[in-house]
Image (cartoon, rainbow, N blue to C red; front, side, top):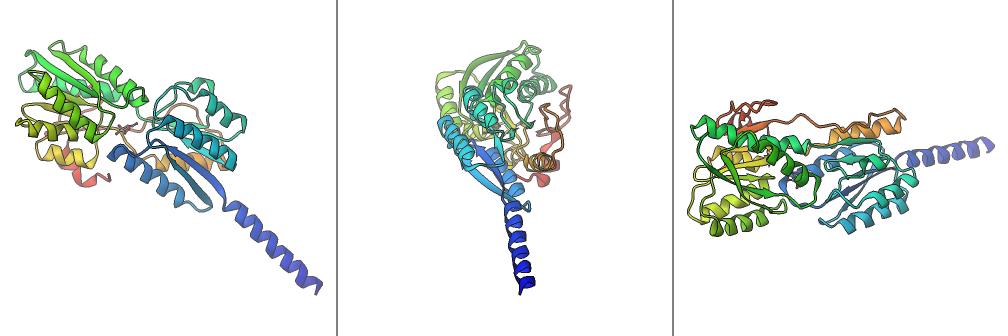
Length: 329
Ligand code: AHR
C-alpha cells in the first residue's frame, strides 16, 4: 500500500514538473496588421513559437496604437511571462515601460523596429532591418536605373511616400533616401509625406499628388503596400505605372514581385519579415542560460527589379521574375 502511495505521489510530482515546463510563456507585442510585410512577420513569429515544444505564445496586436502596446507590456508583466518579444510602432516613448520590464527581470528581445532608448535599457538580443541602408538603396536604385536608360542628366522629379511618422523604419529610410540622393544631383524631391505604410493611404496620397504636382517622374514608396496603392491611383489617372512614373518600393513582398513581373512597378528593396527562426534561437539560448551578443543583427537582404544587374555598391539587383517562385510571403 505504502509503495502504491509513493508511486502515485511520484507520478503527481512528475506531472506537475512537466506542466510547469510546458508553460514557458513567450509574449509578443505586435504593432498591428498594416501591411503584407506585417502579416508575414506575425505569421513567422507565431508559427515558430507555437510550433516549439514547451512554449506558450501570449500574443497582443496593438492596432497601431502606442498606448495599446504600453498596456500590453504591463499585462505581460502582471501575467508573469518568461520573455517578451517587442517591436514598437514608433521609436520614442518606451523608456518608462521598458524599464518596468527590466525591473521585473523579464528578458526582452527587440525585433524589427528598435526603440530609441535602446542604450538605456537592458535587452537580451536585437534583430531588425538596416532601415537607413534600405532607404539609401531605394534612391540609389532610381539614380542608377535612370543612368542606365540614358536619363542620368535629365531633371527628374521625385516624390517620397514615407511610412508611419516616427517609426524606426520611416526615420531610417527617410535618412537613407535623402543620403542616397546626394550622388544624383539631377534627382529633385518635389514632395515628401506619410502614407502610413498602408495601401489605402498610399493610394489616397498618390491621388492627391497627381492632382497637385505637374510632373512626377519617380515614386519612392517606403513600403510595397503604399507602392501598390499608388499604382491603382496612377492607373485611375490614366498614366502607366512603371513607365510614366518609375516606382521603387521596399519589403519585397510577393504582390510587389507580381507587379514588377507585370511591368507596373520597377524595383523593390528587400526587408525580411521572417524573424521566427531568429527569435527561436534567442529564446532557446535564454532558456539554456547562454550569453548572447547585444549587437543589433541585420538579416541579409537583396534588391529585386525588372531586369537585374543594377549595381548599388553593397548589392547588385536580381531580376524578380527569376526568383518569384521562391517568395514565401
Ligand atoms: O518595420 C518594417 C516595416 O513595417 C515594413 O517595411 C512595413 O511594410 C511595415 O509595416
